[in-house]
Length: 335
Image (cartoon, rainbow, N blue to C red; front, side):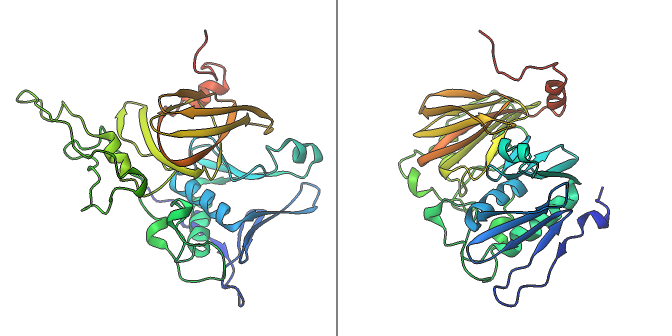
């Protein structure tokens, strides 16, 4: 079912005469970029004008994930001021609402929008503000500069489809294995990862039921960072491995428990209170480590070199509401 046309309407200016970028507005929020920065404006509940500034590259990397993930599970904090909350048929857009200092000062704002409306605006902004030399999905060493005046676009890179298996990667009729022919060469950081696939010898009649594939080989060919794919799905149990390098461009606020298994190298995580940002923990995960992020926390990862991380998600559409009602726990396990 298509969204009503008015929900997909994007409010934008003509390209600027000097820099070439469009300005955008959504509800009470305004968005403008220059050669180095993205500027977000809003008015407080008593009418005071407010503004927030982010590095243009950091903003575009965060915007890329919010768009590609469909606003993800729960909070997508672009930084400690600005972000979104996914309610799955609508999305909150906020500035300062989950920053304890700004909240206390009464200079925060939160507005709710139908998902189709905010998606259309964010997609248009991402396309207009991303120049041809910059790929916001790539590691910094693998792309050009996000800065400067408007120069072309990179629509092909920012509209990559997420790779989501229905049952398991490599099964007949499901998501294909990555290969050179698919435009997925082995990444520079994983040149030593074996590419051989396991041998399978299923009994006749079970060829589409018994399956295995080389997960490390699959991940070694990832062309993006901090973008989980579905490699196996069992009901609402999603295995979402990904490759990570540099900084997770968003601070993810959980609306459910999220499990991490560090498969190679290491990631350092800063964890804080979801509602206020108050620091809670510093977690350093090395190969073989497993951790869980509770539903009451926010987290941001730092990967000193390209690493492989397996994320397990419980994708149940009712889970977030069960947690809100106290019917499901915010923590992964009690000892």
